Image (tube, rainbow over the protein chains, first blue to last red):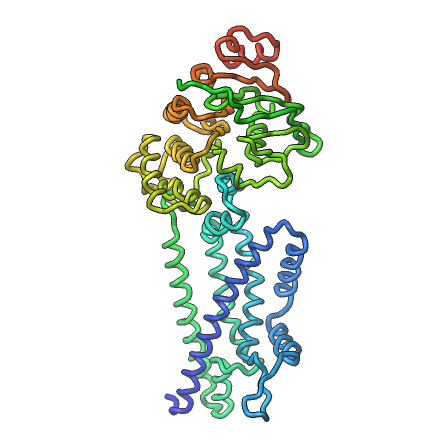
Length: 228
Length: 248
């Protein structure tokens, strides 16, 4: 077993991983929804902006994105000074990790939701339209609730990937589980294998919880007499 | 039947509509008076469905004018919401919202679009379910209902908006023969209450029984029209005669 200091590192690492995953999951899903809605816009500029965003974030490695966000964009972030000496950027490395990973997974989420949206029959949208629904109301109350049911299995996959990709935040010194584990086995080489094993086990459990709650959600959304 | 006024509620004048190079409507004109029931019949691809879809601006038109309850449908600044409050539409494929119960399907538009009080709408929705003879099915999802039942919910859903005109686009075409009748009965009830109805239909018996006026379209024009009595027995145009001989 670990000494208290190491144990504390592991626990705080797990907690950071959970926080990081949680914020990234939420933000990436929000990005996915907003992006998918914007993709249906009549405005060509909005549509091509979304398309450009997807192409950039989907076609480049997330690790490079993370480094780019933190080192390149991080330079230009305004700083504040609590004591007149220090200059602390308003977005920390954790903040950049959340932003960068959310945008990365969000790009996939846009495409995942788009597939779901395209599965909604035009005639169903027409019915909403002819009842006087605005484009937003049609999306909010008809298209999206149906699309999410189609999208959930792929969304599930992408969110699992996102959770595992949070380990890359190690690259910008976010003290998540992998980062803390590496500091432990750098100090105590003999702890390397057990700690790796621990990392595996923690991820199996964390992803397991995610998968379970996604499946529960999927079951809850099932509509009697629809879709199977 | 209730007395019909002379007030024209839908006025279509010389409407032209193309999809790309294909001209679907080639100058169609017709007037519908308040309380009237109009049936549009004709072979597939003759532009019947396109015509009624133009009435509530689901399709735009290239030339001509359409007025519904005084609203100029072809006005580029058309407030579609104002139009859609006046016009109810029922589709061939019912197009209910599958994730909502029958009652919720009916309640959605009045609460979201008209911002009406939920309890008032609920009472009205229950009454409408009764009207279309579906009491007890309020909490069923569309997937749990037969085609005929779904179509009647769709009719109730449109009626919940208290429209002035109802459009029916081949509403029995996707139904089993035995459920066609229950839907037709519902429409007939409506017609007898004085609702202005425009139907695209292949149900000739129904058209003869319920319609005040029948329009026969072929190849994007109205070939012939008249009240059912004379239309079905004294058709003059050879195209009408041929169509009727095949279908009757």
